[in-house]
Length: 482
Image (cartoon, rainbow, N blue to C red):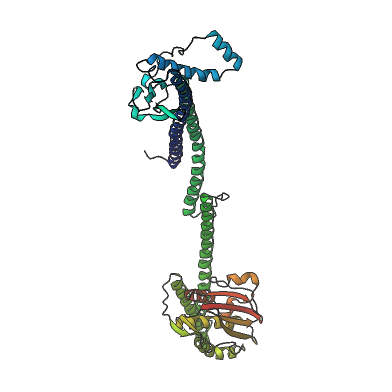
């Protein structure tokens, strides 16, 4: 059985939390026990200092260490006295005096509780005493070489050495009880934290998976053609960015679907118009309504040419879209290609009553890496666009300016102009401004779309602006060679 992503997230969060809590427990326990041992060692060093004072006083009274050799009772008496000095120091002065009056001869400590720890770890059995020649007087149960010695000095003369083996475990009953309480507290806290992590991990994983599930459901609907689907994208995290990207994808697919439908409708309309004219003329000839005259043949021939141009433009545009249009780029002089295109269309401009102004601000040579045939096609489409839509008596001004490793070509014609809200749509397929630049002039609305593909294939940009002459301004920017 496969785990759902919600359960996997929950287990991941919970396992990570348990690992962190367990690590903190182990580290805290280790640190606490080391700190407690350091505290015990400090306490024993204070005890050892008091014992050192008693040993010095006793040595001055007896003059040697014979009172301790083979006499462990005197040794235990001194050790017990040093311990009780610590207990008396913790009492108020009046109570201390009262205790000493009531217990003048009490030396040994009260009996230990039942079940004492191992005697070799008790303070008394970890102390060693050496004479001035480092010969043992009192030796501990463990090897004395583990002890840390401090010299016993009287009147600048070393009389012996007092050593203590550092403790390895906690043996004091109160200290053990305190340590056990701390361990139980740490265990309880760890369990509470782990439980809280489990309670928080489940809703958190559920919330994250819910957002993923919403995206998955929206993606499923998107694959079924529901391009109007959108998801909530208010969060600022990665899932929020994914939701925004999803909405952008859905918006793009919706726009492409609308363009596709409009494309099909426009193509069918463009094809239906000349076909309808052809059918009407042919049926009129067949029914005897019209005679098969040269004028009729010219009309039929014109509609066939119109169909041919439309199909050719559609074919070239489709080849450009799929990247199948071939480009043979070489080092070419852009100005020379532009002049040739202008010269080839001057007669047509004169026939339409339009003025093709001389080329402005053009250097003799502008070298770019491009395909001469495609560049000629680009300029030809732009010139034909002016021929189709510019009013008789108008003019076209073409200029070239090279700067900052780029060259800009400007095609500015006269009225009629294009509304500013339609400028960005001029390069869409089959788009025309019906009020001015309509299909009555013979265009199918594919020329500028093909121009855009050719310019982009040359790593350039093309955009439309209002012309100072009152018509349309087409600005093309291309990179210079080298």
